[in-house]
Image 1 (spheres, helix red, strand yellow):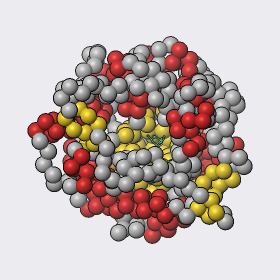
Image 2 (tube, protein in one colour):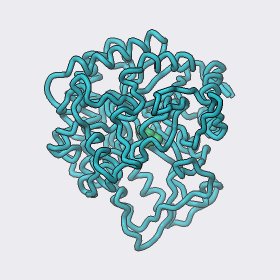
Image 3 (cartoon, protein in one colour):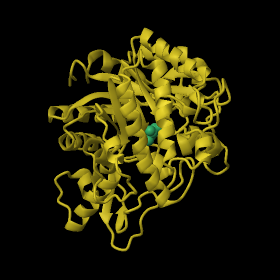
Image 4 (tube, protein in one colour):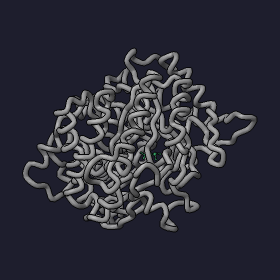
Length: 447
Ligand code: FCB
């Protein structure tokens, strides 16, 4: 299976998950520092204090990327390195780190894909209300401009937000992520202000000449249990309505306002005049992070899940499929079903798979990691990307989550998603068999 000549191959990471160096060079605290240091929030009490020490090891990490033949590297900028308390003049030392990283990538002929927000909000902004308050969106746009001012001469690909659904509904809804609040109304306000932040930043970066603007969402096909293994299974009317409602709450709540300038009926927000014009600033690409489908069925009387305000009468169900170490079901053709549908529903943008990957219980033996299960996962999903393209979906690239094993949020270091194994005691990097396999996929532009 060959991919288009221009297809982009790469891997992704995020600042808090790999950088460490949380007190260096003027970085302020983020909500993830506070959250991970609060006992009970993260498995084993793990924090991002050291993580993969990438802040000090970025040069050798970029060398590793070059050896793997990556064409693109998606990383995020830690806002509290640029503005320790989320406002005011940019910190030159914080900017300098990303400046050197970008230069190292370009020298290695790897395209930087910069994400401006992958969940590490400056703690001071949280102290002033965080994403549930409108002002945070305006602070974000100023920060975005500060980063663009420094990197915009070399970086073409800009992503505003990673997975606003997760920031809003896990951060403020069920509280599983920082800042750990449990309030459905706050979560909904956060979702709207994240979109406002996206639109304000997209508009300003475009004026400043940014060539490619992207929003990255965690999307998934919403399926009934029967549809997991039988795409042709016809759901009952009640189940079909449940599927449509969850699709609106997960995916349309972000893509409709951004790409069509309107919220779906299922979503009610306080929207001020002019917000939707700002939010629908033109973008070029939508990034899709796909791991598993969302499986639901109608269940009259079921209360709404804390992370899903508006989901009353719907039950989230297990999928009949093998699982990864995270317990996430492995359903590769969920990715093609999703890409084909979204490409049809939103023909005005291109798509890119900005995250896909799996955690397994890897073992290092004799300097190798034989992660056949990860190779099977990635190959299965890539084949589905190929099928989606053949069916007409406009998919421009595929980035593996993740380059390195790293701090997997509430799961700490227990879950390993990397192509490259990290020994956290020594910081030794060992490319897993999947990394060598992926290198060959890239070299051959296909499977
Ligand atoms: C996504 C996140 C990423 C990583 C993967 C496993 O939701 O964007 O940081 O944690 O899940």
